[in-house]
Image (tube, rainbow, N blue to C red):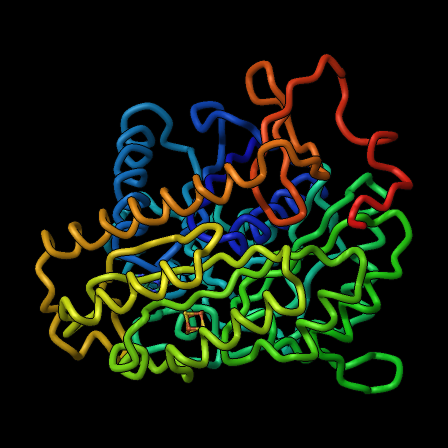
Length: 423
Ligand code: 5AD
Ligand code: SF4
């Protein structure tokens, strides 16, 4: 069978799609790059904002029409967060859909796809106690690896705890084995993923000792042939002094922390149920920079949360000026079903949300530019990922994207091997 997979949303979804791709290939099926060549189309979906869902719905419209008019035997499947959230309603709404596979059943995909040839499939109930992840390995020089899934935080705007369930951490030995497998295939950099990665608590299969993220980082730091370790996303309230110290002390762990602040107003932070104040966050950023002066700190921000006034917005702007993030991902608030914030009035008009978004984007652009200019003339370690037109594209340890001019035909290998460029 020829299978096409399209992915929306976060890095976790990209990772999940890479696992599914692996399973598809293991089954002896072929992955294709063009959906028009496929016998099965699978779309891995995101529910975090309404916009992400609309994009998928319009894709489904295109594929549904194609199936009806040109290719009636085409199998069409929705998987991931939207599948988990909507479940049966998706099958009822779209007669052309063959399978709906939620976040808890992704690893059953090849078998479910096989069954979908005969009957329509709805798979959203979890049948697993723990992590059934196959020991897979993506290719490339940089790979994601999921170390925990789910979230217990229930930030009032966020649908993740409802579509991905409660936190489950993988045992450290499992992660170590997967990382070693990746390194054998040439991976130089891994990014440990979790919705709330710094509340990782993995129980050892050997001695039942619980490892936190700093413990895990120390273990992974010893893996031979691995050059860089990154992790995301960190929650400010769980970013301990022990973790900052581990980032500082472990040579392979990069000086890069993605720590969403969401808002600079204490009133809004409380309504968001974030569990920290503006002052806590400023203090945290100060501690990070004191211990690791070269660290880059990146963030997520939501504008137009219910009841957000101009004065709340200005506090966010001031906080951005004060911290000077390396990058900020800025979103307009989008009410999500099930969440606590959905019960509040979505009372910031769309134009106002757009205005605030535009202002913060412009501010961040200026800061990022100024930070970039400070690097002019400096020598930095860049891990090359791929060719981008006539240049090589890579990332610094601080996660800055860099384009490099080089006549080299192949990236990786001897240029970075064996050198400790951090010092
Ligand atoms: N509306 C807008 N942005 C949201 N995010 C999460 N839920 C929502 C929502 N309902 C943003 C947060 C989070 C990022 C992944 O998406 O900033 O950190
Ligand atoms: Fe959502 Fe908050 Fe959990 Fe992040 S920490 S996934 S924003 S509930």
